[in-house]
Image (tube, rainbow, N blue to C red; front, side):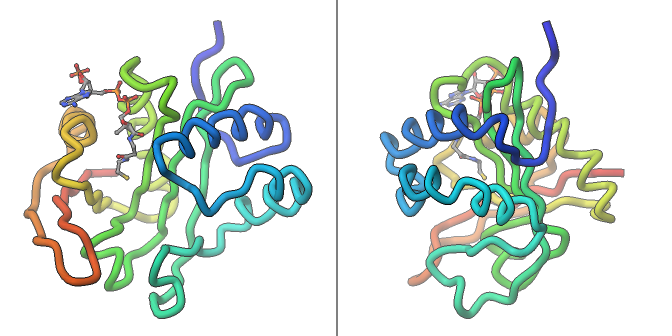
Length: 177
Ligand SMILES: CC(C)(COP(=O)(O)OP(=O)(O)OC[C@H]1O[C@@H](n2cnc3c(N)ncnc32)[C@H](O)[C@@H]1OP(=O)(O)O)[C@@H](O)C(=O)NCCC(=O)NCCS
């Protein structure tokens, strides 16, 4: 059976991605992504995910400096399992609340070890992009996310309190050399 791997977003995995998107919608995430619109503009949607330009970091996309960002999907047996957003460098917002790496596993695939694999597989890509130490920021309530980051070698730096505009974040550094 083939192992899971990271790939650039592509049309081959779009149907599976859209099934995952409806799972994310059920937990209240990615509600700004409309499956019907994506289907109608599928080629453009995939091209936008592949262009390494910055993605919009809501809700402050208008006044946060853009940084290059690479999106990779983790797939296995033709199915979308999860994905990472790798920001090639930090800006003031990412330094405190976003970090170098965003990662997610689709709800129906959680608790099977894919989260750990996702981070481990992202490390060589971050190294390739010149990131020696990756900042990872987590919601303090997400104990499962902290567990996998620590399992992968992430070292706790600090916990930033919530502000009027941003939620609290625990910050970790992950060696990518
Ligand atoms: C965080 C996330 C990626 C984990 O994915 P996953 O595939 O379920 O992770 P794994 O199966 O590799 O490991 C989960 C670990 O957390 C543990 N865990 C699961 N739920 C837990 C909980 N509520 N409290 C404590 N630990 C928990 C599991 O036991 C497992 O640890 P173990 O292998 O040592 O027993 C997934 O939950 C997710 O996508 N969450 C939403 C997005 C997110 O929070 N991303 C992180 C910030 S960008």
